[in-house]
Amino acid sequence: MKILNYALLVFLGGCSYGVVSTFVKLGYSEGFRLSEVTGSQYFFGAIMLWAIAIFVPKDRLKCKHWLTLAIGGIPMGLTGIFYNQALGYINASICYHSTTAIYMDKYCFAICLY
Image (cartoon, rainbow, N blue to C red; front, top):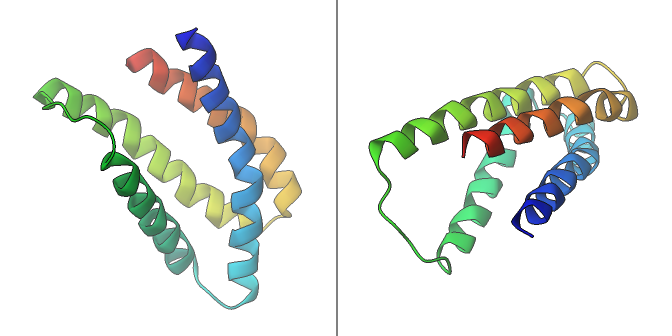
């Protein structure tokens, strides 16, 4: 049953790229730069994660877990930056279809690390 939950999370993550591209394109049309769009995206994502973390039981993380989080998080952050930059040059629907497979593969890799 746990693997189905992971598969659902990967699916929802892949679907979220369609929503993200809409907001990024709207931000670009209003004159915002890449750093402003990406920074606000990560800022509000961090706020949402901290709001969820309030209600989740906490365990102390070992150094190995911090390293795993960093190894998994850095490529995910870079993918978001490159994705937002690509949206400045090409159509959102083309960018969505070409990166969904990359996004889903990336999360499968993150699940395997866990």
